[in-house]
Image (cartoon, rainbow, N blue to C red; front, side, top):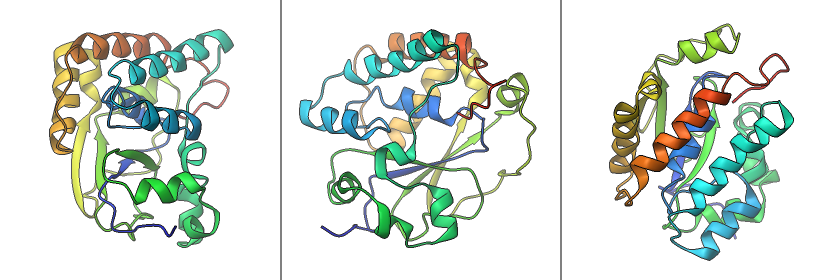
Length: 220
């Protein structure tokens, strides 16, 4: 099976290293049509179907792992697809050379959205012409509290269909729910019953744990 570069299910999260984008992918993953960035669990979500609690339970396990190990824990692009944006910046055909079977399957289906991350302004996913882009804004407070210097200026418009996510909203429940629902609408998805309560729980867990492990080189 070839990669379908015309897929409209790819969602690229654009933000500087350490600005909290993986948390946003977990929050959006509450929707049963949005997959977590890990191959085995993504396949399980696809197999099980629309279980509104699966994404929530998987997200909570991420925070539990962070607390258990006292170090930052996250899933990532390579765990989902076998490659990442850095590899594409070095070789724009790296996805064709090293991607796993799941990536090919994901690009050839039209039910589930799936995330990849870009920490640059180089548009490494430009060959995926119908991708969706989510650009994080107002994240400086997260990076400051994590002790990370803001090095790259990503305050720019990205190519293709795009929307912003205001990270300042994480500080207040209603604002955060509104931002997440804005993304659901952007993707053409209807929010499920119970999402506001679950989102508030995830938001609280992020605030409790987002600094953990960043003196050890974490990078969510």
